[in-house]
Image (cartoon, rainbow, N blue to C red; front, side):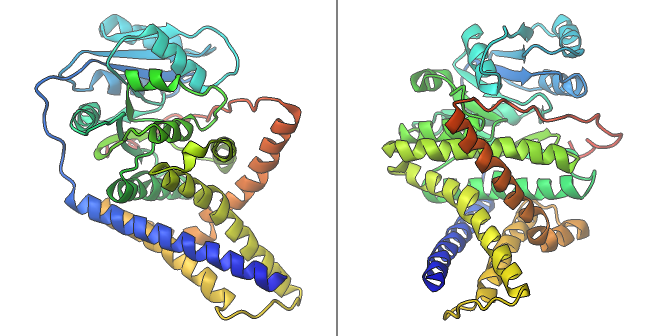
Length: 415
């Protein structure tokens, strides 16, 4: 029985390696050939939506970045204040006195709490052909929005466009440095690879542009989705629209600096993706055409990869206690060795393509599989019971806000 189980694991393992290897190569190829989008004769109206709850630590820097956005069309910026009890409102109101296109919008209380409900409200009080979402800690580069619009307008049947998310506190500690590398792989290289090979883009939760008409057709955001960006991506793709990737459109955001904060944030993300996987099992459209590859990646990333890590640990512990493991043609050690090789190769490819080759980043790429990647086993063991219990009890899992940190001197020098 154990031997057959191992054969099944091997089949999933090699599928995972093959899929990620091909997508990585596609991403490198896309980046090498990428050219900035062409300028437009007419720039459509855009509303910037910024959901916020108790963000006074970072909101000043965010609003300064928004005020510096360069856009040739009509641009309105809406700070959607979800019942903040700190100085978020006071700070934003000061900006609105100086900049006529910055608007402070208090969001009425409601259930369920979370980003999706706030964005739906933002859409209801604004008017524009497009809207772009930025998190409250984001500092987009001045031309980030313009590049998204130019790409969306010149791509046939595009529902919007997706930019690149960079880590502005990458040099704070080991954790933020590794998060920055993960983003370089999954937010940039894998995004570019999926677009190059399958014409698939994936909304990243921030620095993402969408057509208002398309989101209205979709029925707005799913207020029960904790990973609202991933859930909306699948619906948009299943409806036949495209989300082109724009690696030159960059925003900088703050990532968790403490492990506890990171685990809480990623538990919400993973729980949201488990919700999406459950939804995909009930929706046949999630397995048709291009959407199949999107759903497949969710399964591989959030289930298969983490389960393989868990199985690897189980076999390791059994061997320590002297249990005899089945002998199969491909040595188990070689399987786990290859997973390390592919994982590390992705990281190395990302720092080469993104021109962030430093001694520190090289060291991180060599140790991340044994350190950072292992955290995702904990996340699955934490998220899965939470999701199952919510389904049994019928309770909605509450939105867990990520804690912000005051920017350190010199932290944003690269921006």
